[in-house]
Image 1 (cartoon, rainbow, N blue to C red):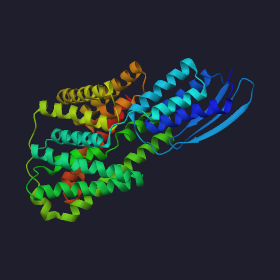
Image 2: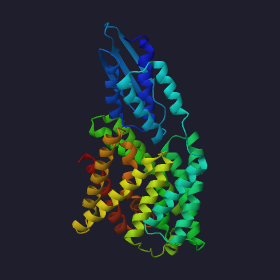
Image 3: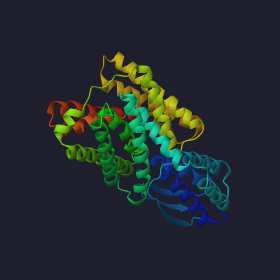
Length: 395
């Protein structure tokens, strides 16, 4: 018997609001809230979950109708809180605790352990530096990116508090990032501008929007899926604009002289760097405990799948990326079923080894240098890789 209907509805919707805000897929939240309302004894429920708000009209066993709407604040991805909120939803299904007890649990989750800012900045630098090595950077490039990434992570935290538009703050950060990389090249400290830029770009690319958007679209949540995709697209546009402005600032003649021959790292080095990079970014997303280890394992599976598929497909990167995305999505959903958590906790880091950040940079660079052959080659590759990732998730 529901003793406080209004408050019970409110805490159930608050659960959904917090799940969406911390990074859960909209379709999953909608399905979960429906069964929670059923567990609490409501006769029926008309529910709509979106990235902006949650609306519910429910009917009690006494045929009384109640409607409530909760606004969803801007997303603040936090994998630890998402995991705990998911566990709370399971408890609500199983034990149906009262609304007061659920609210107390919300407070405990909200005030749970968080990494200190310095750890998050260092983890971001560690992830970016490892991906610089993954993208065939030299040792000095790795060191430069590690230092620059700390500054970028600090500024991202500061700017993100005041400006929520990814187009604006990604443009600012990408411009500063590229200026620092070019200055390092001019000073003779850097060796590969492409590798340094590709590594730091990983700090700005939103894997959450890509994975959640695709997942929502697959489950026919069109509006939410398109919203997440548009956020990722705006972020990518901001990165491209920022890099373009930095390249134009220094001019073509300077850029022609600072590009140097890249080293080709061994597969073992790239594998270790890939795992290290994904672990670093898992910490940035506030993953904890075994989730961090799973992030490394998932990165390994994605990378190995890519390399094996690339060999079997005679160097066809589209097929290799497609199979790697399939492997990442399969392992992420398998873990989500075993641990009973949203798959976005895993998939966002698992897919990082095939995110085409270096190709994005090379495409922008080709446009600035008016290199049409390189632009068509890298632009085509960028498009096909993105399509392959999307198809991999669908499969």
